[in-house]
Image 1 (cartoon, rainbow, N blue to C red):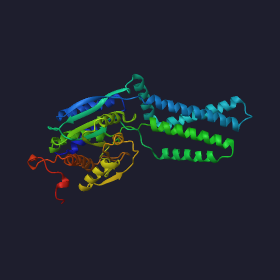
Image 2: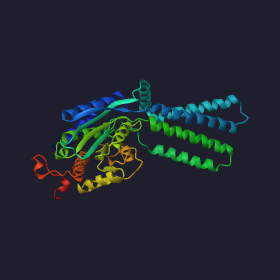
Image 3: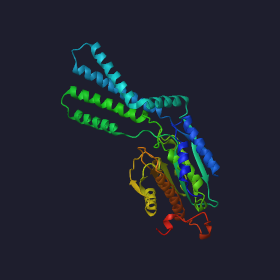
Image 4: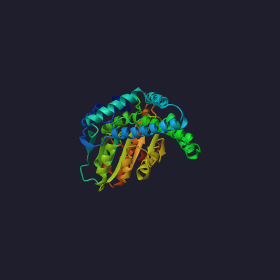
Length: 390
């Protein structure tokens, strides 16, 4: 069956709601994907994932940073105004912290405050300790295949990306640290330390609690593409290798779903495995291939042969869901669009699906399972890379 772009866009609209890690909305997205894949004839399992709660650790770090900054501020006030009464210094201390709290609430925004409250409630309820949202759909080859491919995407809404203001705060903290190292005055050093403390509080709060409203960059296209591939992968490829369509949870809490899956695969590497992660594909005209090693080169070669416009990012520390598999030395790559958001480009979404299917076919061929010529029916055509260009 051919890839239906219009149906994929409709599926993306179905997943266009806020999906916090461990929330009911995340489970609802898992249920919808489960239903789509079962209707396409896939065997679907809901895998339980053990996931430690990240929220108490985040709050502990934020509290310790706040406490150290409070001590540094009080010390700076004592050094700067030694003759002032203690009550006056205490008043300045409280005013400074009230202004800092008001500024943090403004920079995090209303959505960030609501997200922080919901995460706190989910953590108190214990929902972050065990997740049952992971969806694993399989359609194994009829014979004992020696290769498999995992096509995965994350269910939850990702954390907000660094913006220009975050980079400014980071640069300001670095400048204050340099001045602190060169300062000859204890008063100047004390106020530089206070500035660094407030900058760290700002960065921590904006990184962990800032939550943007639902948009095209919340990976709705990745889930839609995963569901549509369940319809599209009705081809000879499924008769050559094991194919798994996987949706993982807990990405914003520390990639718990991907880590659990990679640990399980790392213990059983008897089969040649390729992992393809879909993270907000179809945003913008250009497809971005993120990763290192064999997985990235494999995807890049397929994209070049298909004449698909793409850009390569060889970041070894990118926090996408292919990274846990790289730690297990499993070939993996992420196919992404623009993480900044923007309109969904149907041509780019279709090109991503074409690249995924081409990679699956090549992985089967590389494992020694090239399909016989008479296995192609009238609806199945050879991959574009083996056709004559033009």
